[in-house]
Image 1 (tube, one colour):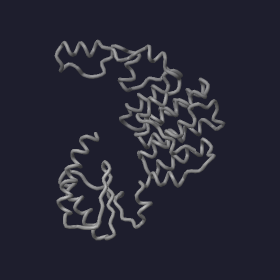
Image 2: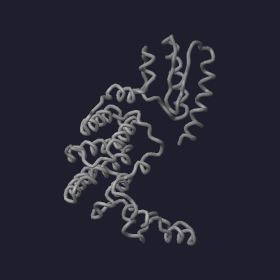
Image 3: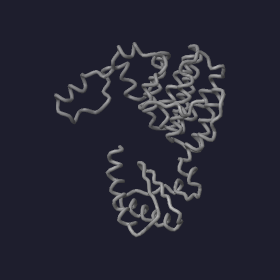
Image 4: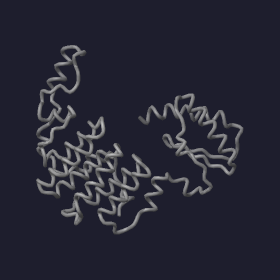
Length: 274
């Protein structure tokens, strides 16, 4: 939570300000958990990093050694490496496969990054209203699923893109791609979050898949107990057990393709659109 993070790191800022009173000619900017230190003296930067490290250790935190670096290029270093990679890689007139593959490359160098999410959002905005990809859907799905497999943060937007791909397929192809997708994720544990999104992606096209996640099973079995409520008082337990949170009317009105509003919490600006 940003609130808790700011409580902790705000305190770290106060402690840091006490430690660096004697230093001069520097500027420190912190955005959430990212620090930027600007100075013309490398020794000053090293001292500040040392103080930050010591303060964070006392709080049970530590700097990420792989992301802590020194640079004399102020302009380039002021941009996060994942965003810089994406900006450098932008080209016009990419095919769908090339566009998605570039996102795959981004996921390799900067896994679970915010820029990766933006890149996939941009791809989804590009394809959400098309009637044909003019590409091999199986190849596109393979690239997409490999991104999601290694980047759990992409589950929602990857499921939205998958739902659009499946909407362009016939029933037989949907079953084939769905089975391959499920087999892929069977290899890793704790995929309940993904199963919920996959169920949404397949809710109107393939209802034959049996998901292991209890929240998924709740749709077909309203009486299924999702959480252990035995420790609650009887009145509260009855309310929880007897209150349905599955709205059949909304499910009936849902489209085959996941809508942007379901996966994008904030307004999308097309800074990454091809």
